[in-house]
Length: 251
Length: 354
Image 1 (tube, rainbow over the protein chains, first blue to last red):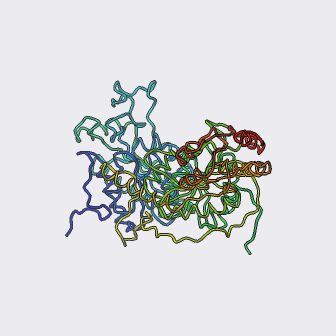
Image 2: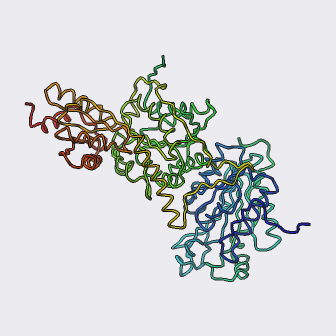
Image 3: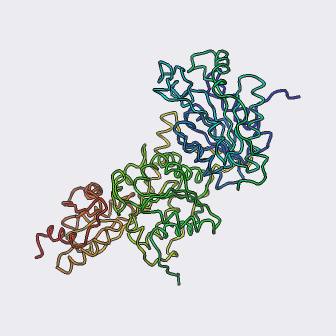
């Protein structure tokens, strides 16, 4: 009996992610959902700019790498010409909530039948720990060395809440992958997001609270604690929008 | 016999794209090319296509990126300020070796500039629309009929060489109406898009459409391979037109709408006994270097006429190896030169009417 195996929708390329980074868990969850739904052959993933750019090497489905922040627009181009394909973007907080804010808001407004996997770790990982749009007030980063102050650097953005206000957004949930229970719930949410897309209900966005031990300057274990104590307080977990049971599709 | 229709330049761009089998247009309204979006918004749904108004020029070009990455013919259109916004996406499209068509119905610049016809994006189009080592094909129609022909060819060239192709028009061409015949396009053999990311159907390894190469040597090799294709484009795709250059002493070099005004001036000069001629590059990249070099052996002087401050002058000097003097006459900011002022310049270069 097989107890544990690698999802088929992941390739054999080893992840480059830092020890303790939660990208690996989220990649796995997305791949498990793709396997369970049997949709790898019909799925196109959009990699964004940031730590997860190399996800195009890790997911076994067809992949397109988008310019920084533009993944939702690229996904729109794929999905509109291939409405029966599954299209997902995998984006970090700088990509989605700073440089790509307009693209993100407008796929929600248009109700594009795509799934956005949004990794919120409150920092720019790839460039080495700069302030992100989701960096918490008081949080120290290399570009907010005295702690983020709202008077100077402005306030962190709550993406799930913001996107939930858009009529074209069908399913929006914020999850975390800090413990087994939350990991299982995150997978359920990702599955629901892909089902939402299958049923052509509109945009599905899953915000995943994640850690960046390297740039937070903490051990993986301490990072998870910090996430629970600080991030969850500002970014409460939960379902922010669910109109997937409403009649009619979005085509 | 092919049917002829009286149509506006901007609408011809849209109709020619549809006839070229393109079913996806992503745009953003901007004067003086908005009629194109409006035309496609009406027509695309009737042919099972899509005309989608994006939230920005940036998004529009990235929708094109996604659409062409999945193997479909796609195009976008704008005018000068909007084309600047597309430069990021164009660089990624080139870096990912994707075909697409981009239309620039130029207006005066810089900045918000004006909304009248100009050719002020020559350098941007032919030298540096986006970051990185790269070129793309630039087609400059001078007639509404030529828009139809070149727009059809643009999609083929894009697919054959996996490159963006720009149709560089101007506000005058976009707005004017002329009879047009859409049958005039030549048929070309097109490669299969085996690289498309449209779902592997569990039948092949996954396709990755990508412009990132962390190893410098890998990136260098990728760029070198692309430049081999550029060589082939320079070899095969140069287009130009000549008028009375056989015995010309003064050769005027002009493209697009300006070339038509020059033609009138050249005729007038001939009537005055001045041996003037017109050389009209149709492809601005690849530039018709060899043909101009050949003319440099025959003519006495070159005159470049443009609706800008002389952006093409250096290309003529380089192509001709500075063998002959190259002078310039131009109007800018959306001002269209008159045949009379061009004629006056030709007469001056001739040392008077004689």
